Image (cartoon, rainbow, N blue to C red; front, top):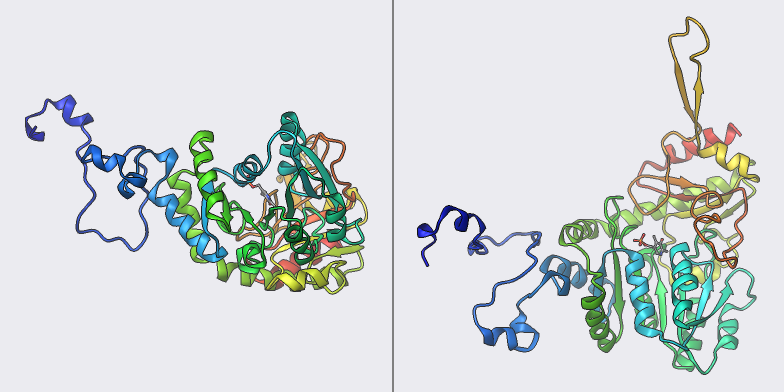
Length: 415
Ligand SMILES: *Cc1c(COP(=O)(O)O)cnc(C)c1O
């Protein structure tokens, strides 16, 4: 049928657009089409639909571009991107665990992961053993001692939130290999520039792309990369049915973030090292936890597996009052003072650094775990980790490091 002969309402709704034959863009475009044209029935029935796409929930050229790049960095058999880091993490648990299975999990871990395990997985009859990375004298040995006949997954993070504790990654992977138990590692805090878990022998590597990979605090996304193609196929099928795939708009932001990932992580790691050294020298700071400091309890393990130590620092200013004072915007309402032209004085102790949760962006962010990400409201299960009241979690950004240190110095001197 000739398009020109159609009625106006048919013209408006008819899908006649074709990909531009002479456009060969440098950047993968945002393919937002929810469905794809099939020229023949045969094509639909070919393996993988003749490499055509079918429906966005099942795969999309913009998201697949991101998957190819991340898989390349990680050295895996395939990657899959998800609508958030937690969607990626829960997909891994659903793939490896079933009713009656046992999970060995590091503690502390990301609060959302902890809550998914304690609130959702346990409802389906999954057993879990938490091992506190800071309290176990030999984490890898404790993992080995916790193995049961029904242990189906060992799960840990490269750098624990919020205390920056680092497990013995190599030792734990060795134990897992010996007992033929799959391992999944959430390497978000380290970033894929500083560690590639699959190359060390892990089965699954996970990142929240909302952090370093996206890198601009403007997207929520997650990624899973697996060493074994069978796991990729199962996860892909699972993603069809859970509907957890990433939107192409968000995927394009992740793809843009990836282009500068190495540059950003290198600069942030350098900034963080210098900032951690400064904090350690300040009299108002009682403890600094940064895997790149020789004083870090597991510095030895961090050095074994990480190129640099990324941008996450935890430091203790003694009391919750001090911690809150350091980050809070103090608003002095002077309205009651007659003849005063300034009605409102806003005073913030840290000025360059932003008081907000999340991490891995271009801007330095600070938060107080006890009253924010790690409070009773956020994590209901009693096994939630103990967090020191004066602990602050700091995500170092791309600013000039003298300005970051200057801001912290002013704020600390004020306490
Ligand atoms: C942020 C984060 C997650 C969750 O990622 P979202 O994208 O927020 O769902 C998981 N693990 C770690 C270590 C994180 O920092």
